[in-house]
Image 1 (tube, each protein chain N blue to C red):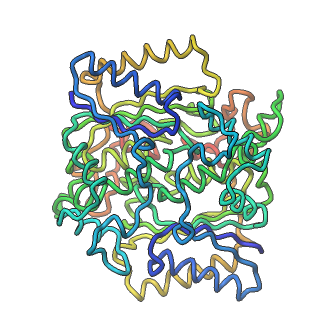
Image 2 (image 1 turned 135 degrees about the vertical axis):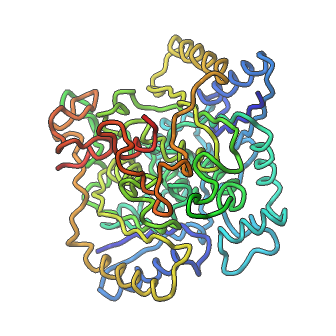
Length: 259
Length: 259
């Protein structure tokens, strides 16, 4: 495998730092190639602005159009081009981050906002009576697999089906389906560590063992069975899921996973 | 009303810029006080790091503990303190942003990550057999109301109950419930403009009229009926919703809205 780990924590001596370090060591020991984008260490610029789109950015700025033009012309900034190249190099992508306010840290959202440009991650493919562009299972990054490795301060029960925060799979759906599956990446079930506010050394040993196990079985892990956009399951162009496809009573985000 | 508008778009001559400008004009004409945090114009620092927590930040950095200590000691950076003061001043908060990759732009997530510190927005209140801290309907920002004003490139059908992106109310739930309601803010139904990739001048006139109408009725609009954490609806400390409370068949995020 060729694995890109995108790491988003400011403290190297954190649980996230340990999990990334363990991932690099485990994958390399097993003969795999690994590259790490350590966003804090890189001083990653988190915010989209006109400076991203080179000397030909329009005024007023039109983000989709400008990012697509800059992508086509090779005018994107070197930091963004380097990340796009890493994504094209990789067959496996791991995003390592703490869940802050029920989503990614801003620096990682800024990696998505800046790297997933028009014509690279969206605005790809043809529209017709049976296709609505290459999206949701098709696209520039098809053939790749991704995995979220997420640390969560609170206890697992708060993120269960009836937990007050909402189910963790629903909280991660906008990332799994909306960010990763959109440009074609298959998404593996996430690795989630709960209760990190009070993790003991003994508990960390169990976490580390479970993480190694997940890393060593990445190639045989079944992805989440998201429905492909252009498979016939959706009406085009409304992109409503056709009636009658859902397993009994499923609703909300769960509709978009095959039964 | 005293309204704080947090504005997150890099281009003043954008739809988001127009909506914020219209909000300021409309609210001030109606005799209300308005303050705007224009995050791009302010050069808002989007990423949490040790520099946020003053000269006494610990090494290794422990974000919750350090942010709580810095909050208690008045050691937070002036930019963060100013935003906390604006939130305490306001009775109404509007977040104006484009939906990028199914969530907020990084700069706005970074406003949340940095301003919503321990002891200010979380880690508040007592834990007991009947209370799990002041959260979800109680907390530092109780008594305030908030509204998301969101521009969305794609058409409304893609965000409907059976739409491929998932329902817009579920995509916004982590912000509504997880960010705003958590420290006690009541959340009004969002103002969402769809199809902004192709918005015509005639359509903008209708959008502007609808936005003015929402702004002038903020005080009489009913908030989303999220369940209070400490109301008896949840078991403590598991924070599972008690069985039998949900209206017929509701599941997922919808469980946390009263019937």
